[in-house]
Length: 213
Figure 1 (cartoon, one colour):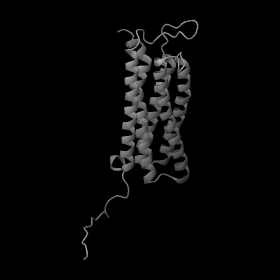
Figure 2 (cartoon, rainbow, N blue to C red):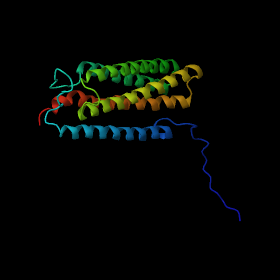
Figure 3 (cartoon, rainbow, N blue to C red):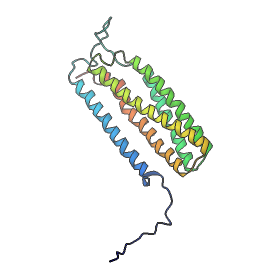
Figure 4 (cartoon, rainbow, N blue to C red):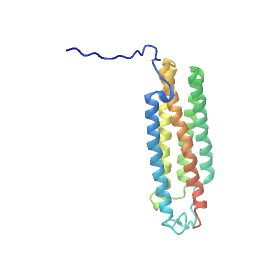
């Protein structure tokens, strides 16, 4: 007994799709939702630790002289904040260029993103030094270092991904698939920049805004 199967004519559909119609775009968005939840947990932990200390941040008593208010160095933190937002802005320009299949502009702005991303990674290590405590000195130190390290890992991923894409497009050109990849990576950089705004405020202004009970 033969079965009759219905068919759908998809011959007029485009062979590929950009933005939210693409499975990889949806997958990337779900990934970022998970990563955002991770940072939310870190922030909640920071606030929980705040409730366990009378002085905030807790005095650094492991070294001499005793530091009664070991707040992170704002100068290096603010400088890196600008660099990170600059990397996201250059990726926005690369994103716009990918819609036009403008290979030279995609290469130029993606290259700028990689350069600023590398600079942000270097400055992050200077930020570690500017925290004025080791990661294992106390609970406050551990959560601040955890937030900085986790965001650093995303900077590393973004730079590595863009570097590989830059090398591929330079050699093989910009097709539909890799224009979509540029757009997906751009969303990742937007997230890196946007998520750092509240995290930066918590790390560098939390010691002052949360000082008083």
